[in-house]
Length: 314
Length: 177
Image (cartoon, rainbow over all chains, first blue to last red; front, top):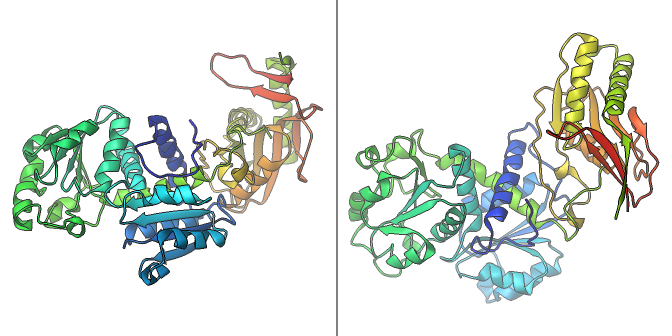
């Protein structure tokens, strides 16, 4: 079990062993969150910039709390408040932050590849908090952590991801993570949002929601991303709910121990029924709790230096 | 080829632990106030063994926990991120006498991290330190209260403690490069 990367940019380039290292490390950090004193000094004296060029509340808050619990110092940047509005390029903004001697940049950006770009031009640790429709690695890691915690394993599980796959970085990161860990992933949604090309990533693609739910151990719902849909991909929200929304009738046909996940924000009454979202089978709030532990683990791991992992006894 | 010498065999380890248990009992009259905490990983099986020896001496069970100090280390930016093992302290340490247990006392930095980490769980009345081997080379003002064996070493040497590993004989080996 080891980790030698200075950044977390995507899931695609990680090995199954590296993913499991994050999950095991996160387990220890979850225990820290359950203590009376929820803070450890692992990043004491380190400075983290949360560079959120695209709006985000839950991911940013989750990162912020994770950083605080590791005793790091934090600067928050949002698109509205930064000089990017005044025409500064991303590279210049980041270079200016680097000139302040920051140690970590957590970046959320609407352009795919933004985190990779920063990792090439800067000498700081870079963590991808979501880049366009490309990847959202910490979300996939916290989802995998939640599944493993509740089901005891990931290998051999049937995971159905239902909704807007095409525009979803959460779906892409989850597909990489789950297939690497040996789960069987099924994608389902309107054919315009779930094209057959995803079969190349090792997934089953179906547009029949009952077939997708029948064998599922995990039902992972995704929000319809209005903000990324430049043209109408399906006739109406009402039709989407009728054809693909998770309701009691549909859930009754799934396995009795199938669990429901959603990365949030939840559109109640669209992709998920009110009652189901609040039921004991919903892991939505556990995902939020686990997000802190997983992000702490990621920050802790990328902070590691170049020396050997072994500690001299004593 | 590194040259390895056994400096403690299984019976010698058992004798050292029995003596340490009696020294802990001698030092701490209020036996109900004593709890043991083994430092991951080498200290954990030793703490468990000491707890059972002390339970025999005192005639009541002695609480025993395990502590991982990785998050409190001072060298995290100089090395690859360490593997973190479970921390389980299933009792309140506030007001107690905590006996920290580790296998080898070396530069003292693990103990500093352990003291720091222990504070997050409460405020012990006092903390004592028991180690199986003290190999010297302290970089911090740390001294053990209970020592199994003082073993002078050179910095190039390594001390390996094998204790309670399934299918292997307990022993302490000094390895010279």
